Each structure stands twice: as C-alpha cells, then as structure tokens.
Image (cartoon, rainbow, N blue to C red; front, side, top):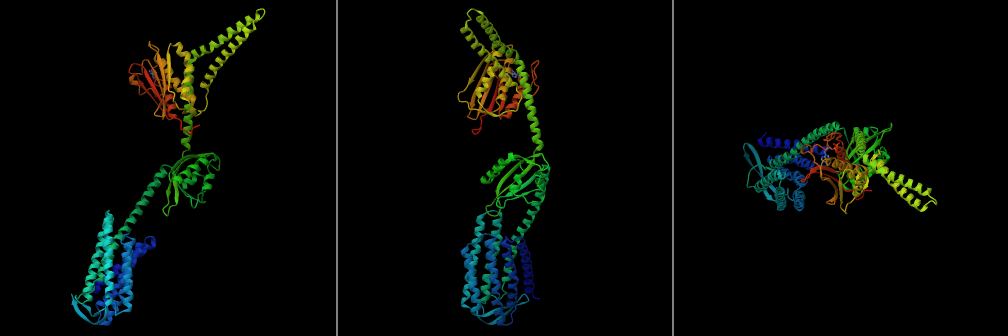
Length: 609
Ligand code: ADP
C-alpha cells in the first residue's frame, strides 16, 4: 500500500465514522437537519476518495477519464450538502449565491455526462506518470473541455458564498459565531482555495501531483464535525444539568409540599404531579380536563378561580388564588394556587403552568388567631367602657332624672282643678325626648359591647370621630378636658369595621385623658385629614405628660403599661386592628409637651361597597 492509499483510506474511514455518528444524532432528533446535511457531506467524501485514488493510480487514459467523470457525482453531493449545512446550521450565506452554486454544479454534472470524456477534458490522450515520495502519481495530458469553465464558475461562486457567510458570522459577534466564522469559514476558504488552484494546475498539466481534494474535503469534515460534536457534547451536558436541576426542584417541591400542574387550553388537558392529584382527591391515572378539576372545587370558590385563570390566560400574566377542594369522603382542604400563562414551544399556543399548596393548617390557624383577636378586642372594649362607666351612668341618669321630675310635675298638673292639660302635653313631649336620649346612650353602649364578627364596609372618617366624641363627651367634661375635633372637608371613606375603628380612637382618647390627669392645661385635638389622596390620617394630640422616651418603641407591645392598674393591652389591640385594616399607627412626643398618636388608614378602593 502506498502512502497515498493509506492516507486516503484513513481519511475516508474517519469521514465515514463521523457520518455514522451524525446520522444517528439526526435519527434521535429529526428537527436538527444540520446533522443530516453533515452526514450527506461526510458520507460522500469516502465515495469521492475512491474515484480520486482510482484516477491517481490510473494506468490508461480511459481509466483516468472514467474515474474523473464519476468523481463529479460525489463532488456534486459534497458541495450541495455543504451549502445546505452552512445555510441550516450556521444560518448564514446568501440564498442567491447558494442557488448559483447549486445551479452551476448541476449544470456541471449534466455537461460531465454529455460532453467530452468528462466536464474537464474533451479527450485524454495520454497519462504522465511521476513518482512522489515513492508513490506513483498519474496526471492527464489531453485537450481541455471548453465547458471546463462552468465548474470553475461554480467554484468561484462557492468561494464567494463561503467568504460572505464567514463575514456575516463574524459581524454577528459573540464567541460562538466568531468561532464558527473562523473554523468553518476559514477551513472552507482554505480548502476551496487549495482545491481550485491545485485542481487547475493538475488538470492543465502545470503540476504533477495527486489531486488533493479528498484531503481538502476531509479538512472541512473535521472542522464542521468538531463544531457539531461540540454541540452534541453541550446538549448532553445540558441534559445532565437538566436532570440534576429537575432532581433539585423535585426535592425542593417535596420539602415545601408543593405540587405541579399545567393545563393546555387547546387540548383541554390537565397534567398534575402525583401530590397534586392527591390534594384534589383525584384518582392517580384518570385523564383530567378542566371541567373535572373544577368539579372538585367548592361551588362558592369555582367562579373566582375560573375568572383568575382565564384572566391570566388572556393577559399572558400570573394569577394567585386560594380555594377549597371538597373531598369525596367529606370535609374540605384549603389550597393555594399560583399560575403563570406562557407560550408553549411549538407555535403560539398558550399554556398555564403552576404550583398548588395545601394551606388547610395555615387557614385554620388564621381563623383561630382572628377569633382570638376578636376576643381580645372585645375584652379591651369592655375594659375601656369600664373606665367610662362612671360618666356613662351619669349620662343615663340625667334623662332619667328629667323624666322623673317631669312625671312628678305632670302628676301635679293633673291633680289641679281643672287639670292643666296643655302643661301636661308639653311635659309629655319632654319625657319622650329624655327617654330617647337615654335609649340612645344605651344603644351606643350595646353596639360597642356587642361581641360579634367583624363587619367590613365603607366607613366615613367623620362618623368615627363623631361616635367617639358622643361616647366620651361626659367623661371629658367631668375631667375638665377640652376636646377640639378638626375634620377636613374632603375626607373620602375608608374600608373597614366601624366599631373596631371607633375602638382604636376611643382608646387613644382615653389614654390621652389619662396622660393629662396631673397637668393644668388639658386639651385634646383630633385631626382627620387626607394624605396625598391615598389615605386618611387621624392624629390624637394631647397636652399630657408624654410617653417616657425609653418606652416609646415598646408601648405597642402587649402588657406594656406605666399605669398602676393598666393592662397594657389597649395600644397592642389598636395596632393589631390598624394592621388588619392595612394601616399604620405611630406615637411621638410633641415639642411643646404631650404626645401625638397618628393612625393612617388607606382609602377604600373605588369599587368597594
Ligand atoms: P394601658 O392604658 O392599659 O397602660 P395601653 O397599651 O393603652 O395600655 O398603653 C400603654 C402605655 O403607653 C401606657 O401605660 C402609657 O405609658 C403609654 N401611653 C399611651 N398613650 C399615651 C399618651 N397619650 N401619653 C403618654 N403616654 C401614653
């Protein structure tokens, strides 16, 4: 075996092996056409090498002509596959140039079989034999085919096509594009350049050497194979990383007790992880559609969920909801769902995907805390009213005394002869008035003392202040305290529970009263004003002793009190109530003495009822 045969065989087998690998890669993933084109290219190279060796070692002009004629077939395949590869894999190269290359190559093939002994020679008269490093090399001597120009044009077009593609890739920037430009573009320009120059020199008899095309094509195959294999390797690595990240996600999901789901609206197909099916009380294997899923959900929650779900799909956004699933064996499970609409990979079809979480325990605890808070609030209300009881008794006593003396007077007027009925009539009117007053006081007390569920609605800030003023009026008078409300005119309603808000203000006013026990100037200002059209601020400002600076951070904590019989619960309840209303409460000492408690509540949303 000569060195040329050895080298050509090695290159042919290596090409064939690479071709096999990428054919397999294409089978595994048919959408990646680049593998197919690479296969076509790499598999044509051995075929070409056979004809080339045959030509190099030809004994007669006929043998040479035969080999060089048939070599045009794999050459056509190689160039076609190559152009397709550059267009599909590198996404570069102008279409018209590619078309030009293919048309001229096809023409070459036709001319090859219809004119001369091949497209290169009109006839080959003899072979010149030379010995190159111990291997015999034949070269043709004869008349050139005038159509010889067509493959040359095709080669020039190919060269321009490759250079243009390499420039495009280089300009595209980025590490990969530039490497492609260098490796694939560079190797091709080199190969096509060498092949063209040497081919021309050998065909015209200037050079006596073996045609180097197999070696050139092999160079191209190696360069492109290297890039494609890199991709394969990266894909494998990505797949490994993906598996790893899937495992991690699964672990995290299990630790957080999350379940995954997705819904394909076009096929109405719901997928859910095992844990999800468990939560929704669904059999592990039955196929699920949206109706089947909604059926498991509590009738009161169904519409809200459906709306959130459809909204997310329409706006390609996210949604979050909490709802109940009714179990088949009875009872309910509270579930929180989070979802996101996303475009599915193929085409523009949208998909909803998300997680669900069992929040039954959280919900139960929240309910318990709510109940305890109501309980505490009630206790604190009772305590506050206890403090007020003296003056409240006085307030009820007054109309009762009025009624009594009026009734006695009426008795007297009735006893006189003749009975003075006009006077009695007037007295009766007074009695009715007094009775109404007493009834009003009792009604207000009953409302405040009522232990009931919190009822949220629109609350006028002015009404809250008014309520508190009415309940405290007598107490303030007795304690010789001046109370001046300053209400802005433009106050919009807040959304909340009127009684609870009354209680907060009442607490602040009572605390202010307590703080002014030993001072001479006793004044309270209640200011209600709008803050930037977003919130209402109530400020209760007194002229008392002020909060001890060391305690100012702590007074909102439970059981912090500086009073002898204080429970230290008032402010803590206030803070809880205010927080539940989405607001804030703060305390500060005034520069001129006394303290100011500020309470900010967000305005009711415009659609609140
Ligand atoms: P209590 O009134 O039972 O002490 P609170 O939680 O209502 O419980 O108040 C906690 C503490 O905050 C009070 O003991 C007092 O020291 C301080 N404090 C509250 N309001 C004022 C105020 N207007 N001026 C000065 N100190 C106040």
